[in-house]
Amino acid sequence: MSILICDDEKEIVEALELYLKNEGYAILKAYTGREAIALVEKEDIELIIMDVMMPEMDGLRATMKIRETKNIPIIFLSAKTEDNDKIMGLTMGGDDYITKPFNPMEVIARVKSQLRRYNTLGGCPEKVGTYRTGGLVLEDDYKRLTVDGEEVKLTPVEYKIMHFLMSEKGKVFSIDQIYENAWEEPAYNSDNTVAVHIRRIREKIEINPKEPKYLKVVWGIGYKIENYLD
Amino acid sequence: MSILICDDEKEIVEALELYLKNEGYAILKAYTGREAIALVEKEDIELIIMDVMMPEMDGLRATMKIRETKNIPIIFLSAKTEDNDKIMGLTMGGDDYITKPFNPMEVIARVKSQLRRYNTLGGCPEKVGTYRTGGLVLEDDYKRLTVDGEEVKLTPVEYKIMHFLMSEKGKVFSIDQIYENAWEEPAYNSDNTVAVHIRRIREKIEINPKEPKYLKVVWGIGYKIENYLD
DNA sequence: AATTTCCTTAACAAATTCTTACGATCAAAC
DNA sequence: GTTTGATCGTAAGAATTTGTTAAGGAAATT
Image (cartoon, rainbow over all chains, first blue to last red; front, side, top):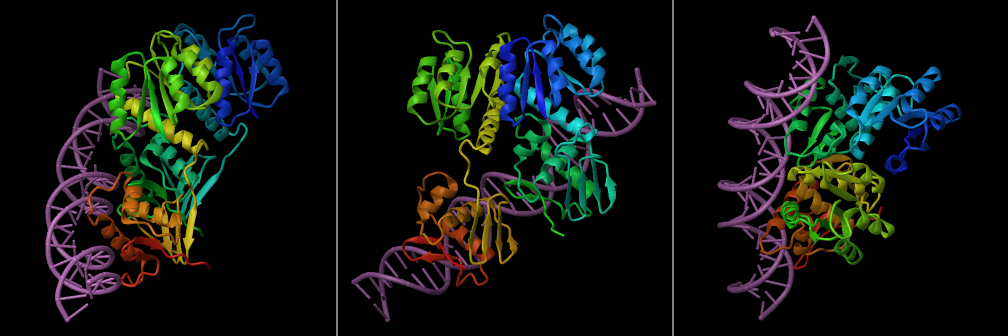
């Protein structure tokens, strides 16, 4: 499973390649729409990053062609804001797009987001799992959290926080780490946004929020999910 | 380990210097690409904040030169109007960039994020481990200390002291050494802050604090963690 | 045994960190 | 355009930690 990057500008392709490889993804490269189509036929690709404007057969056409056979999520790159209407028309549910110039961090964030999204929709499951501790069960498949069998409705941010914390039960994460993971951007201000969300999650999942059973604070360090081996 | 700030605008360098010093980072300054390269060769630098556009040898060139030998994460500064694509072409995985004018808080946040990121990716990994002696177990990941299986809640300072002492079980450390390690600053006064903390830790981990089993004093020298081989 | 030095203990005040409540903001839905 | 729900920011209050002081013991020195 790899990510296909398609852009006629070599610099951009290579930069993205570096970034994404660093994140542990396998990368395939194409510099024209034709190459992209050929690779999609041959290789096992889970995500495409595609420049909209390219000579010869442009990105949009290539996309249409690909879409005839395969349903691979695509992140579009576009230089001009005017193109966006066109892209919108073409994107199928779940596709994303980024306008140039873009922040490398943003690209990584969107790739992760896209893969996570796609995976939860049953496209081609990757690391989808179920996390448990005590009566707490978080199921990636259904984006669902249950406490002793009772379903708890979490907001997206709350879900992300819980997912992050439960990915390594017992481990303590700092507020900044939690912020970076849930918001996908560095934590600027020393606000207590995370703390507020923690409180809200507690209100939902804890029987007695004042004495949390699951979502515990480690004073001066951060928060963690208690790991109950049962 | 210090942070190198490189920009031809003195004001910017000095502003950043103030902010980052205030956060406890050691700072090195350069006003040209050449200076930056020279410093990178000589000094122990863990992060570079680099302006893209500078006279003489500009930031991008300096970056290339630096990248030939060292893999230090870089945060680029660039004016909005400048060609961000160019930056993309040069950056290696994990770099970040900020557009001017920037919020000082944002810079600090990104610096922290970058360092954390780099550290967790094996650049220079923090010592993560588990330390044991007798029934005493200290686990770094979980920021947790257990005595005969029972979890003991330590405050940040207490944890640091224990971590330091347990990193070399049996070895005796002076009060000043302990202070310098837990507080990360030299010990000026001859107060008994450390002693007080030692007492508090004992109260938590020892069955009989008057006859400590683990945290022992070595009269006139300092304290140590008893090393039980089991 | 007295003295000195160092360690232990206790209690308090200050600083820091977390919790909670409330209102503002923002975007989507109606 | 209004309503709704989700998210965010602020600020006050509560809880915890930390540094300081001071008095009491224990170990070494004389």
